[in-house]
Length: 261
Image 1 (cartoon, rainbow, N blue to C red):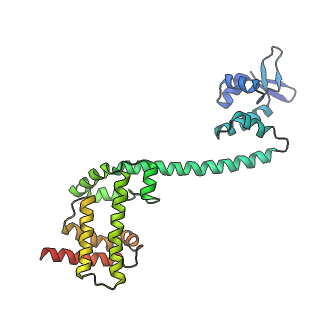
Image 2: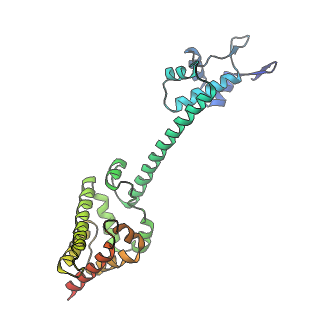
Image 3: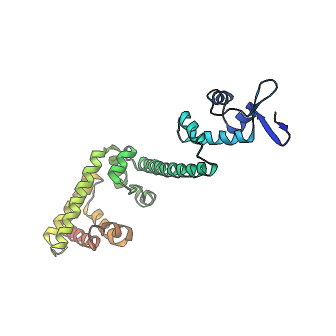
């Protein structure tokens, strides 16, 4: 029951427990250790809490939510040099840090969910180590819509589900070696239709076949066309060297023609 004495209002321990979402036992404990001592007692000796007590409880629960031990909470609240504005500033700083941490956690969970959807069976830490800030499943819905009914898609999903972190790191390393092989040919002004460029294209096709799905020459040609037709692929590939996507396409087409003749 709430009582009022003059202009002052006080609340019972049960009411305060209901307001704050804590147990009566918790409030009794806070009283026993001197962390939150009710401002008054009823004639029967029951605890009565004022609005100021509720404000202090709110501060206590805030710091507890952030993981502060009770003794540190008491030290913070009983600091004679602190004022309400100082507490608010500190709470704002702590909340900002907490929000940043939670955002990173949410990002990790999202990547884990997407990786599960894709079939990548790695922990969040391993996924960050392998893929960094790149979402490995960014275009999964589009990929599934375009190729979901193909054997290549099903084969890729099945293989991905069995790969470990070491497998993914190896695949990335091998892919980077093929990319650098193309880059070196471009820097040497080697024609994309040269034997060396076609050999690099052949290694690129075999790398896909070893690690993702059986990539025949017709499929490889389609990939080469997509590298220049889809600006997302072009932008990503050209990060290694401007014009690389177009160079790879030409070498892939030349290699496919070489093997079909």
